[in-house]
Amino acid sequence: MKSELRSDLRLIAGWIKPGGRVLDLGCGDGALLAWLQENRKVRGYGVEIDIEKVVRCVENGVSAIGGDLESGLSDFEDGSFDQVILSQTIQAMRNTENILLEMLRVGREAIVTFPNFGFWQNRWQIFLGRMPVSETIPFQWYDTPNIHWCMLGDFEALCAKHRIRIIERLVMDGERRIGFLPNLRGSLAFYRVGLTP
Amino acid sequence: MSNTEQSVGIVTAQSAEFEIPLQLTSGAVLPSYTLRYETYGELNARASNAVLICHALSGHHHVAGRYHDSDKHAGWWDNMVGPGKPIDTRRFFVVGVNNLGGCHGSTGPSSINPATGVQWGAAFPVVTVSDWVCAQARLADRLGIERWAAVIGGSLGGMQALQWSIDFPARVANALVIASAPKLSAQNIAFNDVARQAILSDPEFYGGDFYRHEAVPRRGLRLARMLGHITYLSDDGMGEKFGRMLRSGEFKFGFDVEFEIESYLRYQGDKFSDMFDANTYLLMTKALDYFDPARLHGDNLAAALRRAEARFLVASFTSDWRFSPPRSREIVQALVAADKPVVYGEIESAHGHDAFLMLDPPYVRLMRRYLERIATEVQA
Image (cartoon, rainbow over all chains, first blue to last red):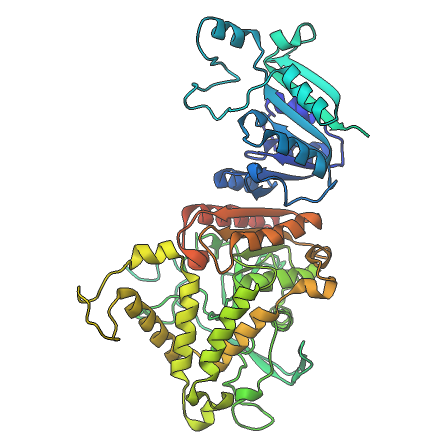
């Protein structure tokens, strides 16, 4: 894969262990997996609901499995992956809790990224009396696939509920890494989590 | 406009004779045999661009092209195989072969048994998918093909592709397993048995030796095909095509053909019983029933597939209830567990099991891209 990796995918790639076995849920055209295969020597599989994107994965030389994440990860055995990725999808899932637990059933680590609803621009739009629409949330309330919004604290509370350990957290606004007041100033959240031993 | 445009054109079938006995799974031995086959395209200098097409229950070696200019019927997968088509004969050397036990020129129940000088009939041994793959491997040797760029098949043909990847791991670079299953379900075996019973109970069958009575168990074969045909279509597809349409527009209050679907099935059954051999039908359904590569590996398909060296494309069709998508997923699950590269596409289609022979656009795109990738890999 010669083209540049999207910046958020580049951040995820930075967390991937070389030579590991990786599962990318909602892998789209397989750009991330293709890059990881080439540059991190991972053995990867993707899951993708859209057959046209599965076809794109074929072009990119990626193992893609057509399927719906809502029905869980029954195609995959316990502990069979080093890392399982869910990128900017968890907020659009109906079975949010289940997918998080499934990721940690089949993988030793899960990488979850989502648009942070607590981002100040979202808060400002709500303050002005409208649902937020932005670069990371490019939908109107009536046509959005995003049904389970959360902020950093909400996600961390869900992790705590299931004794999921947060190994690493990264909060970004565009290309900028946010350290101070992340729940207010960050638009995109990256978590690397695992089960508490 | 010629009817061979966008086609491989006029083709000729060939025969390969094998004198080395073939040990069959059942324990029986076939002392010598003939395989009827066709090829399209050119084998490249390194013999790296060969593709084997495995046929399903009623298929044969005539995959693409026509036998002469006024030939009304092209090969059974002519829409998929040809210049510029997904299985592109400008890049691949494509081989179609009629399986042992068949009735299209390869040794089968209607061939002469050299030991007796008369047709084999009921004496022809039961053959399995593994046996077919062994015979196909000998044909590959004969053609100078060490390793197939791809082995491709739908339904029973997909089972052969899967078996190839297990039995000859080093000889298959890619296996394309379409609308298939890792083994038949009880329901599937049940359908096959009803079909067999239709043939076996036809008085013209004579225990399989109908040739010598100059009889043809046409009624049995016709019923078997009608039943099979129902299971190859989806309820919706059938409803859309025929619905409750009446041939004459009104009820006749009798048992003659009234509904269009009856007319269609009878026509299909008649056509089939004129050209297919009843013993071959029995053999093909038994090969389906016995197929279960996991059986030799403690019923663990992943264990069976662990030795495979191929990349896999598995595809299924939403309205296929004879070999439904969950059956293909079983193959995919095993491949992932065995750590094999696999692409799986579940294609939205109303065509039922027959969809693997149709051209639903996402299916064609998936096949085309996958095969283009293979062509690049093997420098076809």
